[in-house]
Image 1 (cartoon, rainbow, N blue to C red):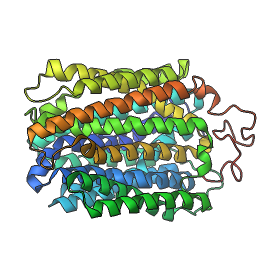
Image 2 (cartoon, rainbow, N blue to C red):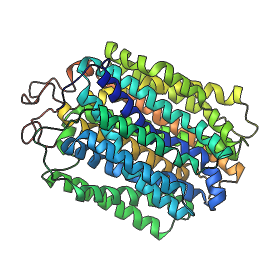
Image 3 (cartoon, rainbow, N blue to C red):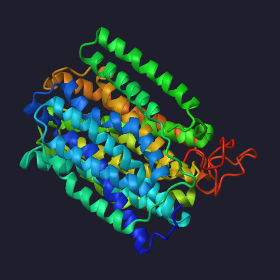
Image 4 (tube, helix red, strand yellow):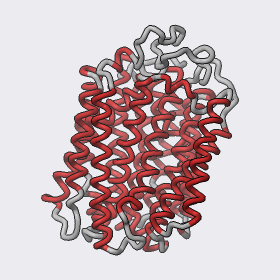
Length: 493
């Protein structure tokens, strides 16, 4: 482990700067692309299924490999994997911007997701490993606020570039930001890795994870468009690969997803909350900007601008939400935030033709942004408090994988649930599907809120997830496991 520093020091500020820039481009890309989808679809001739794959190709490899990325960071160095992932992401982004057809863009997005899988867990793990415990909640709050702003400003920035420079620039802009993040990290951020790190890693598990997510995603997308035998075959292969993945991880000597990390009930619960929360968020970001353009008739920049109030709320409140979670515990702000977000998304179901920004969009976006501001930092802090510091990469990797998998399944499955048309230019059918999708997303957020209230302990940030007598005594600092690991605490990196 690296020597830990205060957030107020020069090194602490550089750690925050580099991690915000690195994770920020990944968060930015996750939302900036959505608002440009109608223009991409028009220029490249993509159907709704093609637009789904442009989004899901990125989330597929990000979700499948982010666990491996966390493990590699713990073993080979968190700064090293962060820098490698950021550079990879930049090169893949340039390939996306140069794509000449839908197939090339989807393939480039697959590669982009791999880069994101290396840099995303590394950014949060660097904060966990480098910043002292007393400053960690504040650092995570600042990371959540600034990174969340990058994600929230994406629709506005993407809309402006799509209307002026062209949609390809939403990918080109990643390169200079990535260079700055890598430069700061290499010059000013200390390296950290788990003691006793070893070189073995779990390629088989990563491949099975990709096959499982790809099979299930393909089945959902194709069934909502054409159905048929291929969708059934893909679903069967995906489920089979998922079962094989679970069995493989139980037997592998160095799994990228150590099964005993879920021995912590708190860690398991917070990841279930994450799954449903980010499924809803991804559904909102995918369908709202499409609806505002396809049905509401707004330009790309006006559709993106509609989400600016959420950006301002994230800027104003996320850091305070992190401090609030430390003071009163994460349970109350997380529960309240998810309820506010659910109310905002429910109001979005009214948005359709002849949309009024003041009446239809603004109240919904304000409630949604307020909810995210309250929920994101407490959720992230709870995830990290539920794992031993030596497993920071694995913990953040699992949670990020859970979030991306939720988004992946949401974007793939909601069109099937809501009956979206294959031709997304059909305004009447799209409006009906959008309303059902927003109600479904609101229900997911409300369920997450109830689960957080019932299952998250208020003192988890202070005591860790398990305080029972059988908690493992040999874990350093605090231990997230209710049973001892197979070997000493660094067993899995």
